[in-house]
Length: 483
Image (cartoon, rainbow, N blue to C red; front, side, top):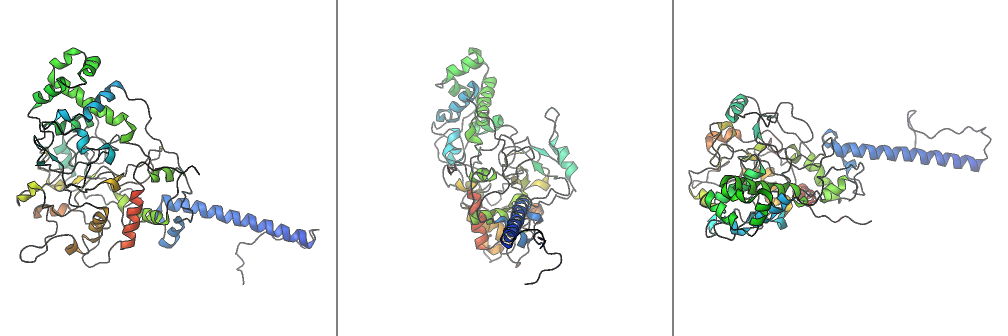
């Protein structure tokens, strides 16, 4: 074996160093061990860099991430929300959250559709939940999870959050955004241009700016809790078993001011969601792996690399996976809106009408920016935390497994016949859940949607299995080993 002149060698031990041969061999051995330690430390540091910035790593070098131990070589400290006893207002909110008597049927509470046993998402795999006065009405959309909303900003359009004290003209913001190219989303890299798209807000279309407003929406929704009007809600609150808590917190006169009563009730629900740790537990395997307290399998590590790979799954382009500079754990969403072109769910009641289209930000359930048609078909990007615990996905509940979701991303452009139906004449109907005039809004720039018909798929079946394995590490409730 020959070595180049520049090859790393142990320090040369002079022959006239006064050492006998045995001592000289020991000295050489120690030098070799020291060199091996230096090389190992360098590899660990490089692996940490590759984990943090996988998009900067060539594919062959990126394999260093798949450390045989499954441990995070660069643990971090996560800044979780503080844990404290619930305030009196939050305790009142908890009672309201679980009170089915507040619905017209007497059988539906907030927790019915946002089950604490299912990460505050739907408790089953139905495309939409049943509600209404007799619990026989189909909902319009599957309930999003209420978990991890404590950092959600109000709805806005443009690169910067709006001043909370300033009057917001969304149509003016949207008009200013017209003609500005949408920033391409690449995992691990900040966009080269401002994100001139809607962001923030609650519900699939962002029509509620606060948890308080979100909590009040189902109360009067005819296919949810289905109260006839605010007087109906006030009467139910006045006869609730926790009436005395209202009087203790706000005085007996609160029941003489109906609008204030409802405002305070919904404020209490929002405080419960903010204060109770179960809404933002950060107890997933991934959280503990970030902290160096858990080890991933090789499949999970490979899935994480693909999740963060800008040329493969590119999931992290929208579902941000990095810890913030100040140590906040990732919530796996950029809280922006995307038009993905998911296929129409023909089982939904409203979709029996072929002329009906749910177009998200521009209607039908919000109307304030309906004229801003550049946003038609856009829906809020949800958190992927606890997504493996859901039984329904996307705004229309068309898919029921993560495998179906990943196949959609993988095949939508390369094999659209596997995603979309054909009409009576056998013609393929791509993007069939959005009117043709708005289909230019659908994302065809971000990987894996940047591929064309007949191109190789971005991911293999094994890749998809590994990505799903990684996504399962985002479920809360992981038990850390004592070892």
